[in-house]
Amino acid sequence: MYICIDNINIMTLQQLEYILALNKYRHFVTASKRCGVTQPTLSTMIQKLESELNIEIFDRSKHPVAPTSIGEKVIEQAERALTEIRKIGEIVLNETDTLSGSLHIGVIPTLATYLVPRFIQVFSEKCDSVKLTMSEMNTATLIEALKKDSVDMFIAATPLDQPDFLEIPLFYERFYAYFSADHPLKDVPLHPENMPQEKLWVLEEGHCLRDQVFNFCSASIPYTHVFEAGSIETLVRIVDINGGYTLIPELHLPLLTDGQRQNVREINNPPAIREVSIVIHKNFVKERLLNIVGEAFKTIIPEGMLNERLKKFTIRL
Image 1 (cartoon, one colour):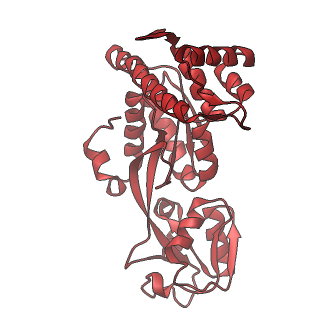
Image 2 (tube, rainbow, N blue to C red; image 1 turned 180 degrees about the horizontal axis):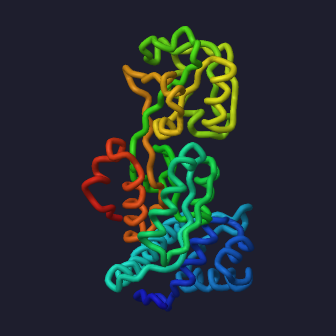
Image 3 (cartoon, rainbow, N blue to C red; image 1 turned 90 degrees about the vertical axis):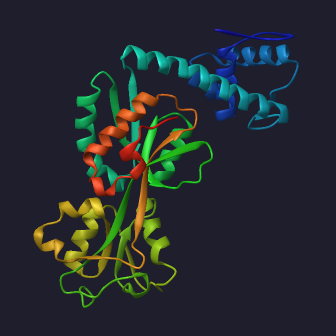
């Protein structure tokens, strides 16, 4: 496909895709592999476009290669153009009622246990023509994966402060304190200022829930003992055997035994809550598929936790 511009020779959509790939990976070999062409082909096509525009889009003297000031503007416009063109395909899909291809969704570990099994079931019933892949990764890995198009979207706690991403809130999940059965403060009303100072068990480094726990209460608690574990289930078992307490997400509550639920306490004034969202790149165009994903999650998340806008409206890109 070609684009004609006054006083400029014809440029191709392929050339625009190549400059976006080189801008993303800042390396000719990596960009060419991602585009499925040889490095000389990608380099020649970009040079041809630069010649047609009579500018340098990239400064090849830098390592890694970087766009020039005018190149940044060209790349930004190329991204807009390709996004609008991709929407044509999405319109066709919406009108012809056909969905195919693949979808790769990432999810953080502290949500995967509760969401992934049921989501696979519901999504397959709604859209069995799309090949679904789901991967469990920590937030930092998911961010890099989405930047590199290794995943199409992911589910994580937000906000993430990523300017190239769009966050679509799904639900809001409370944290609860889980105490050992013999803890002296088990029955005391909890708020951030009176959280116990010792034997708080938390997830190991790399889990976003660990960061949320410390962001929530570290300012008011001078921790003297912190122990780390790899999963929520492990934290609960450690508390049961070794004493102390931990914080667990709301979706974990149904997995507790009747006896364990007696050890759960609410945190108030203020409550500890995390926002969970679908995260996509800002140039994502598969609106219909995104809504199918949203509808699938709506069927497995308790209604009282759902984002109010998601309850009432379809997602518009």
